[in-house]
Length: 101
Image 1 (cartoon, one colour):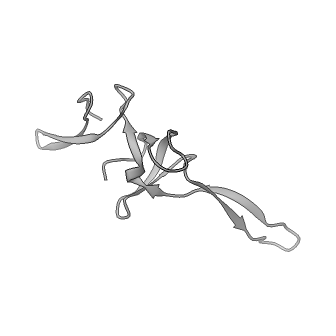
Image 2 (cartoon, rainbow, N blue to C red):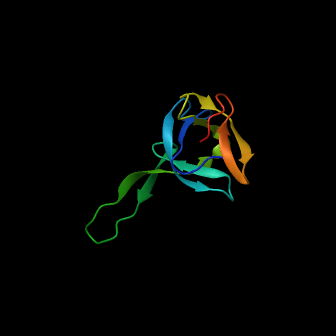
């Protein structure tokens, strides 16, 4: 998975299309990411104590990383990510402006 925690992304598919967000957490085994304000669902919470009311809470759920594109910090455009090996280290690179990420 090429996207990492803290990256700025642009959503390219689904109900949140064309929204920008920051990645909060990645799930590499499932190829999914969790981003702030994206894929919000309403969850009904049961009352914990007697006399307390139940609530409807909005929670962000993970979504497939293929539905997001990285926004390059240098050129500011959504771009694909490539890899470049220099001095034995693997670096992520923007395919548009060839800047290191």
